[in-house]
Image (cartoon, rainbow, N blue to C red; front, side, top):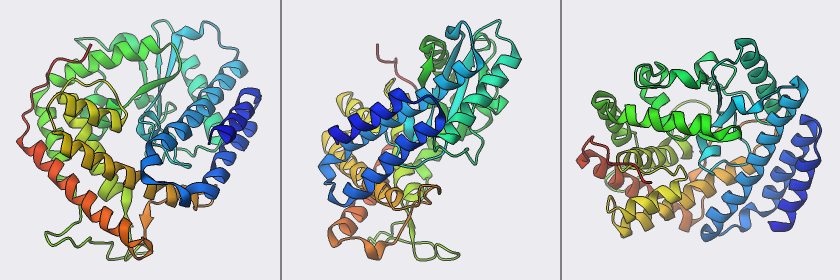
Length: 347
């Protein structure tokens, strides 16, 4: 993909408006449509690294264009954060937005509103649809004054819902003054590790996400509605894996957000053994490839639904899917045996 990636990066670098960034985004889509069925499992991690490097470049340029449009001065007062699959370098061709905005003390609220609105608008025009769950910087819930994140006052969003805690575990800086976000994230993680009640809820959530595989190896599919007979690869395979890994990584003081890297660190620290790491890595390869297949053949103007037809899988991939679901259930058992006491973070 090196030649194609360089060509797409050239489009991004020369872009002066979001419509040109959308052209680059569409080029990623077209290229994936051409090659996706040729991708081998051992190539998945590298391919996703390259795809997400381009997504990151498009998104940061979209925000920069918003900054230029608004003629924002002293830009080190802001940091845009990205969450979700994009932060983990696991985004497919088409996903919606997951972002937030941190700002420094003294920043006028009007500036926050205008910058968040312009950035989210540019991202949408570049081909990243608005988040249906409203996890975006335009939502006051997801923009933060960095000075309120201290030992005496952590924004209540952190503790309102286990889902929000898991979302913020993946946040990374995408544009602006990264130190605003990084300092806040460390304070928040320390506070979280001292909240035993929330940690118990997080463990229960991760350990009990439904993986629809019977003891005899039968994969259960949707029973009703438009997707009857299909399997949601995101909700029932990918999500249970990454959320379990997130929880164990928090407990082990691991700072990385990429799931492959988290698995390597968990193995190095003895939280999981090397066999389990290899099996989970293979499962992640498959889950991401199946998601990529689905995304690549969804029209560009639509967000993929992540439902796959099991009968369309090759015999080998059907076998690997069952094996992957089984190993995810094994990982969930590791969580159930795991305590709720955080280790010191890595330096």
